[in-house]
Amino acid sequence: MNTLGMKGNWKEISGKLKQRFANLTDDDMLFKEGKEEELMGRLQKKLGTTKEGLRKLIADL
Image (cartoon, rainbow, N blue to C red):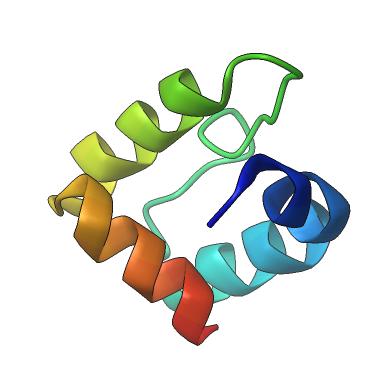
């Protein structure tokens, strides 16, 4: 997912991810401008997936 798409819909995406994965916290879902890679890394670690797998998961929501 590109940065603009993530930024525009992040509240909706993060809500859906937290519903689907109970182990995600609000801190895991923090989105800061310019820190997209850090966010993706946190989510990859928590969900045990690859970057590509995470992108597909987000795109499928």
